[in-house]
Amino acid sequence: MEDKNVVTRGIINGLLFVLLYTLLVTGIPLINTLAFITLPLPLLYITAVYGLKTGTMVASVATVATVGLSLVFSSMIFVPICFAVIGVLVGYYQYMRKSAVERIVVFIIAPFLSLAMIYVIIEGLYDVSILGAVRETLVETQRLAESFAVDVYDDAFIREYMQMLQDMMPFLLLVFGTMYGFILYGLSTLVYKRVGIQYDKLPAFRNWQFPRSIIAFYFLFMLLGFISFEQGSLMASLSLTGFNIFSIFLLIQGLSFIQTYMYDKKASKTVIVIVTFGLVLLMLVMQLTILFIKIIGLMDLMLRLRDRLKE
Image 1 (cartoon, rainbow, N blue to C red):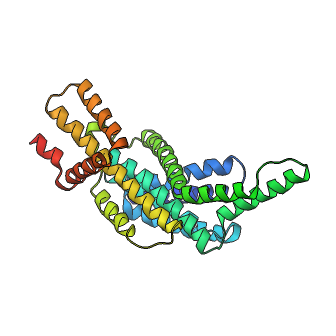
Image 2: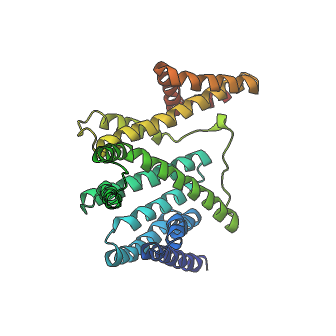
Image 3: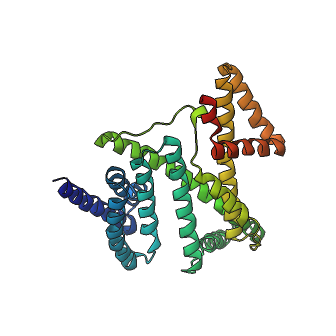
């Protein structure tokens, strides 16, 4: 009976994924936006309830169908694959009863990496320049304004604006991925409540602990930083952005441990807040402070220093 329920729910959620993707690629305003936001949820749910094997099987079948739709409507076959990976990955973290902090990390990183991958594929494989399309739009607007004897901006402004967009693209992808991740996190908690799944809520900041995999990603992007990518290229920007992302995670881990240490030493809440705020200010003016707190974060992740405080 249980196997029958698994198959039934798998089929239903697989069809929901296909339906949502169909609504996404049809391009109907508002409806495609809602489909974009909720697309990973069916696979997230089935994986969170039944585990990685079931989630992967449902995702594989649903992805084959959506790839077929992509070939018909948009030819962007990697888009449904990325959304399927997001759904299965974050659902698996819930199935494994990971902490809310660990799930938040996945909710942020998975969309960011997926968006970056889609961007690289669109630019490289399909030879479609997103920034080029923006530039053409600006040029057309400029020509239209000139036809009405209206002075809007010149060629120099367009060049500077496009250079700024190119430099900021990884950051914009990160911001968009973070926003999408938090929206998806909020929607996932609503799904868990609706179906009665127990989930870990975000704890106090002093109890935040990131997964140790953060260390591997941190050193990976550090090594990428030593590769001589073309200055201003997307890979150069992505490697720098990735390094900064995981540096921020280490800084948060370090500040969290400092709060844990002060809490263990019976420091008052006022002192804890003042010290934390002071360290943040110091990081803004002293690079050495950033290095110091990152080292604390690394040591805490590698050696679980906070666990030793409890012993």
